[in-house]
Picture 1 (tube, helix red, strand yellow):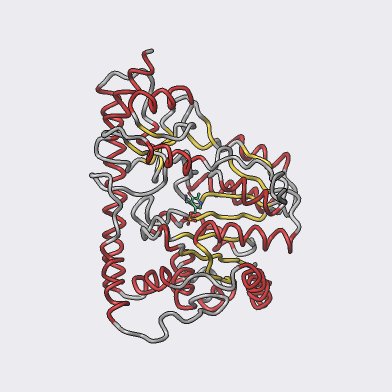
Picture 2 (cartoon, helix red, strand yellow; picture 1 turned 135 degrees about the vertical axis):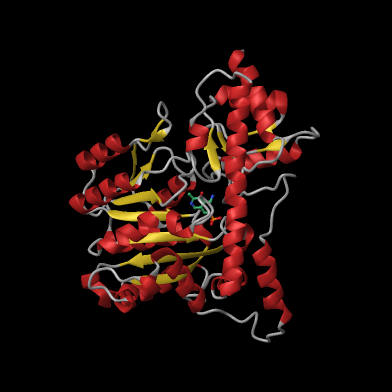
Amino acid sequence: TSHFTNLPQIPTDEPFAVNASYIKDPHPKKVNLGIGVYRTNKGDPWPLRVVEDAEKAIYHVKDVSRHEYLSIQGDREFLRLAADLVFDLESAQNGADTPQSSHARVTSIQTVSGTGANRLGAEFLTRNISPGNVWIPAPTWANHHTIWDLAGVPRKEYPYYNALTGKFNFEETLQTLRTHSSKNDILVLHACAHNPTGADPSREQWEGILSVCKEKGLIPFFDLAYQGFASGDVGKDGWAIRRFFEEGGIEFVVAQSFSKNFGLYGQRVGALHVVSSAAACGATDDILATLCHLVRGEYSMAPRGGAEIVRTVLGNKGLRAKWVEDLDTMSTRILSMRTALFEEMVALGTPGDWGHILKQIGMFTYVGLSESQVFAIRERHHVYMLKSGRISISGCEYSYRATSSCSKEILLD
Ligand code: PMP
C-alpha cells in the first residue's frame, strides 16, 4: 500500500503536453507552434547576441564569490535596474513627485521568473489583503488559473476577448467589473501582448480600466512577460504600468519576467514589484520584510546566474543598446511572420477574414481555428498548435505555409 494511491488527477499542462507529442512525432516536416518560445528561420532557439556578450564578460573574470548566496531579496542592483525598466524611476518627475519619492513607492524582490512573481504576488496579496475574488481575463495564460487556485482565492472571469472583432472587449469588461466586482478584489491584467489572444487595450481603454479600478477599489495585478519583446520598444510596452504609477493614489503589483525579452527561459529571471500609494510610502520596509518571509520559507532566494546577465546588460550603456537591437530583431521577425501568414491565407483564398493576424501583437496569434480543425491539422500535417488555435508566431520558416495551406484544406472540408 502507498500513501499516494488517492492523489487527485491533475490535468496535464497543454503547451508542455503538445510539445511532448511533437517530440515523439517522427515526421520529418513536423512543425511546433505550441510552446511560447522564440525561434529563428530554421526553427532553432536564438540566444541573444547581447546575452552571449554578457556571459563572456561575466565568466571571463574568475570571481571566487560567484557562487555565493544572494540575499533573500535578491541581487539589489538587478532589482534597481529591473524596476527602472518598468517605472522609469530615474526620470520620474510626475507632478510633485521626485525620483526619490517614486523610488519610495516601489518594493522589489527577485523571483523565480515571471511565474514565481505571479505566485509570490498572489500569496502576498491573499495573506495580507484578503481579496474576495480575483478577476482574470477570459481567455488568459492557463497558469493564472493554477496560481490563483493554489492561493485559494475564488476566480472570476471578465469577458476580455471578442472573437467576432478579434479585439479586446472593452465595454463588456468595464460593465462586468462595474456591476460585479468588489473593493479589494484583484484584477489580473496583461501589461502588453495579451497571451493567448495578442489583442491589447488601446491607451484610451487603459484609461477606462484605470478609472474602474479607482472607482471600485480594485487592486491591479500586472503580468509583464513581454516588455520590449512585443513592439521592440520597452517604453511603449510598459506604457500602461507607468500610467497607473503616475496616477499616484492607486496600489498595485507587477510580475516581471525576463524569459522572452532576454531569451533566458530556463534561467528563471524575474522580479515582483509592489507599488504602494504615495501616502503610504513608509510601508515599503514592512512590505519587503513580508515578501522576504514568504520567499525564505519557500526557497530562500531566487537563483543568481540569469539575474547577473540581465544586470550586466541593463547596467552597461553599450550592451543595453545592443539589447535594443536584439529586441528589434525578434519583434521585427515576428511582425514579418504575421504578414507572411496573413498574405498566404489571403493568396490561397482561405475562407474567412484574417485581418486579426496583423492587428494582434506579441509572441502569439489566435488564428481563429476550431478545436477539431487544430486536431485535424496535427494529424494530417504534423503541425502542432494549442486547441484554442493559439500559435507561437515565430514558429519556423515553413510554418506559415504549412499552417495556411492545411487550414484552407480543413476549412473547405
Ligand atoms: N505570464 C504570461 C502571460 C506568460 O505568457 C508567461 C510566459 N509564458 C509568463 C507569465 C511567465 O513565464 P516565465 O515564468 O517563464 O517567466
